[in-house]
Length: 490
Ligand SMILES: Cc1cc2nc3c(=O)[nH]c(=O)nc-3n(C[C@H](O)[C@H](O)[C@H](O)COP(=O)(O)OP(=O)(O)OC[C@H]3O[C@@H](n4cnc5c(N)ncnc54)[C@H](O)[C@@H]3O)c2cc1C
Image (cartoon, rainbow, N blue to C red; front, side, top):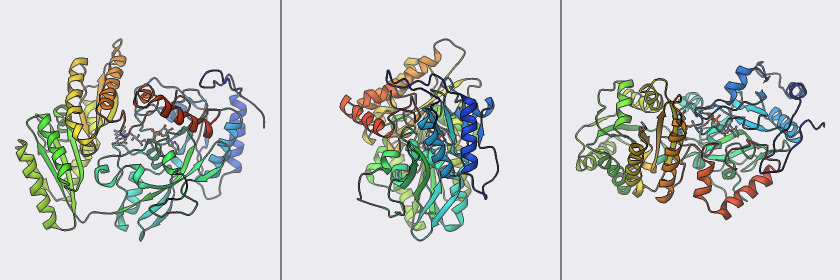
């Protein structure tokens, strides 16, 4: 095998001095052709066109973009394995890419190299209806999975606000509005197939294993969940599925102030009411949501909670709604609306999932830093209040919304990209939010990950010894530091 790049291991990251892109293009084209299967859809598997490279690298973050030199679009695991092995041997950075909905610059090719666009690997390999699990390729999105299995009476509840791939979601340990009841990717991934540095294809839970729990060996599944493409490329995912709820209700409630809303969340959680979703929106968040959706039961001048309840029967559901409404009223909520109609449910969660875009519409031409933090539930009110103070102090617009039942919220920090220093100010606000979360015994990110944007904060959340162990594991799996360089670890 020819050596076309020379690693410079002085310093923490190697830099690729040069490699001959033409030769790599030809070699990878040959490898992809050799490993292609007859039944696969014919579409370009490798590209060096500027527009493809840009679209492979650009995610939903506002960091300055760094492009790869090439983009491969594998259609099967063998192609991933052969291409990874080639790149690793030749010291070429490898950047896995899903649907590029990430918010921390995870798909930017900071050291150039080859992007592996996994979005064409979207086969549903197996659905086991009786055991409620499935095995899918990493490029399938959670929405595509749910559309395909609807008729089976099952669903996959992890629902980030964008149509992310299940491989990308495993990589960032994503969650969403349903995590309060169903957990995050960590709780819903049974096992992963991963291509590692020499092209080996490993199965983190065992090749055939789909049992819901296991005490066998080290938990490699949860080593790769949340590793953000820094240890290998996920090619397929085994997931837990859940029965579709039979009776459900959606509730919206407006509150006089932020403290009233968030204290209500704490009380609901402490009472053990089995909410399936409980989302908090501050007043600017509700106002943006209303402007875009015009849902009549929203109260644009107030902070609000959006809640969903699941129950086995209508009677149980009505009981739960009553308890909830009592808690909300005792905290000053006046505008309370509930419905068990599927149509209203769809409208409400569509508006909530679109909130990021609704907020962007409030300031046309502005850029955004979307950040998230997560704290223990009892600290949630303090976290929200401290964040509002910071936002005032930084004189920026930054509506909040979040998966309140988990103590997790997002802020869409809006800034004028043409104004000197605004990006830095917005970034500093996000960093300060992370620091408050650490001081309140929480984490600098509950679901978006570290990417390139929060590496400094990672160093503040963990002590030196723990961080050093993480780096030792990284070096064991990726001694040349070619998997997604510049992300998570610095
Ligand atoms: C409007 C909006 C709302 C969002 N809401 C939420 C939310 O509620 N909850 C939440 O958790 N996130 C949310 N996100 C963030 C984003 O959707 C998640 O981070 C998601 O998990 C990213 O998946 P993706 O397929 O887009 O991955 P990408 O953005 O393509 O990649 C993300 C990271 O995963 C790595 N990666 C991708 N595929 C693989 C693979 N096959 N193997 C190894 N590594 C891989 C990449 O290298 C990168 O580091 C939101 C984003 C947007 C734009």
